[in-house]
Image (cartoon, rainbow, N blue to C red; front, side, top):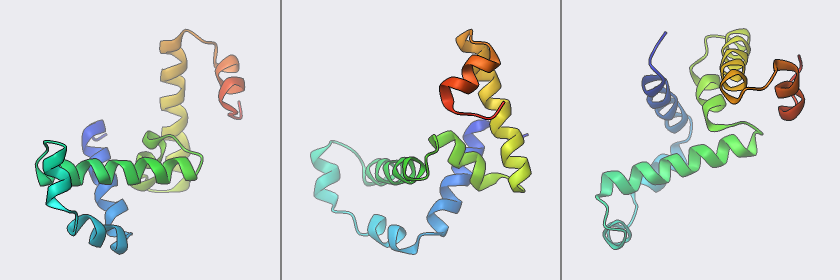
Length: 109
């Protein structure tokens, strides 16, 4: 399996490829806005891309990591399996039973 950072970068690339209007907006950002934030244009552009990615995830009712998985999954079944795997890891780290975690996040057990 790819590293999480690799998956996320691939998902961002796919996300941007599917949205030519967003790419055009990012390519024409005002350099003065980046300068005002004391960021390079690359940093400023990356921040705007991440904001758009997170907004898209939220509009779909997903966490950003779920949108990442959705974009890089080989099939809907692959997405669901990987998504549940991550949710189970989070439940375990949080010290919650799987049943309680599913209830909390509206997941089918």
